[in-house]
Length: 231
Image 1 (cartoon, rainbow, N blue to C red):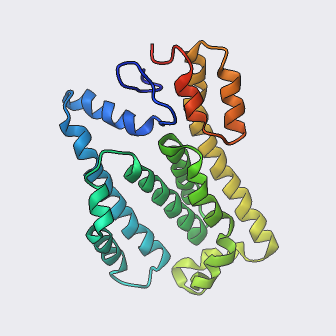
Image 2 (cartoon, helix red, strand yellow):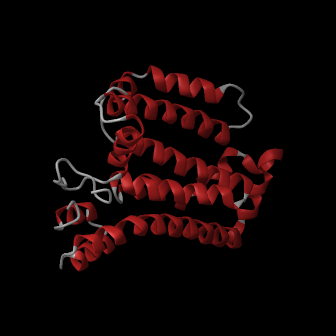
């Protein structure tokens, strides 16, 4: 039941586990109550606001107060306020995307590995929230970073001159190698959930589940439908 959480032993289709794990975690710490699941969306919304501010400061380090302004504007948006009151995984998925993009910017600006680890961490967690759609939000930005990032003038700022190491064709290759390692980190995190979940199913459907994962289809629907996982 921990690998693929569900309701009364029933696993819903195409629902990924991380948000449900958070609910189970609050219940384990504070006792079973509907209060903790209701508090998760506002807390996640606050986390997204903090990440928006951090991301803005990383992209435009010379613009004083931009991070606080962006976070305040996000909190004041009607759509943001609505989603902050709805129990669901949308804000958690948004938080994972922001973490991945923040790591991407740090990796470009500093040329250090901590950013690429954050990128892989965000991709792995994003999959556990909403499947392979995390790549739709992160991968195009990552692949085109050597195209759009120099336009921000980072290479001319003292704090960001590390970005010049990605200039030219050799720099592009170095960037994509590091990006590939970030994807590998995400894949390892995904496999750390998928493999035990398939093994626990005790069903002949695990090979079909792996085939669906490789093809990029909604793997979660197969895992949740395999027998025995929630037993």
